[in-house]
Length: 237
Image (cartoon, rainbow, N blue to C red; front, side, top):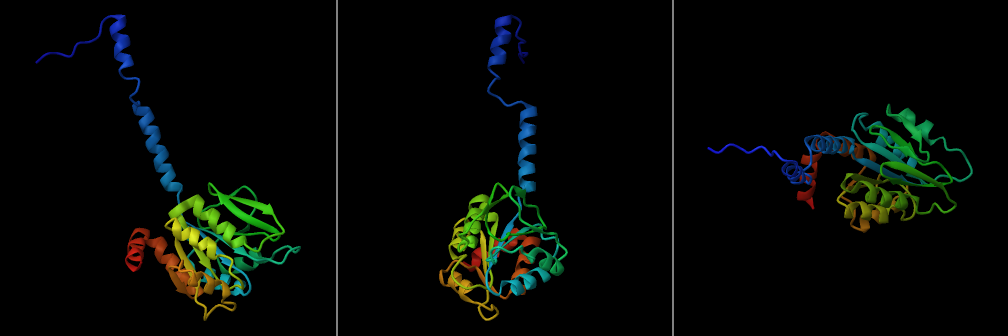
């Protein structure tokens, strides 16, 4: 068997090096694998929850039935009265052991945390970071957040519409559904103001119509085995 020839001259050595320039080094490959692993580890579902009139009670019922370790982040978007400091984070913190925080600009969302939109503002998300902008026009605050959520995390987006008047949230649920996310609407019979859930359901962009506590149970089920859950969901479609 012929032995591999070792390059001897400078020109031969240079030719040998040039032939390997396009090949990634072991160190580079290891770095890429580590980055991919980190990206997968840092990826988690983000649940947008929208409500308006009658939403406080629905929010509380949802949180009371949610485990604290779903691995999901929750962003609550409600039509709040302008000009007043919201007590919503403090009130909702009595219904869950998860940290409840008022959303702030450039705040990165974390799993098992709850973020509440401040009054006099609209909220979006980009690369997992909340963007808060003072705004007098908050009539479509839920739609704006849901659409940005769908664009940001794609199939990891989950949208929930609870009690409220009007149609805000329908467009946002459609965007989440289009990206492969999962959508919920509160059962109209249990919603104090059924307009928002009804609008979303009528638009045929809702996967599950349930009472608030049942939505919490489905989210818990989803978090425990997402692959099986999504398989079952596709069978229902």
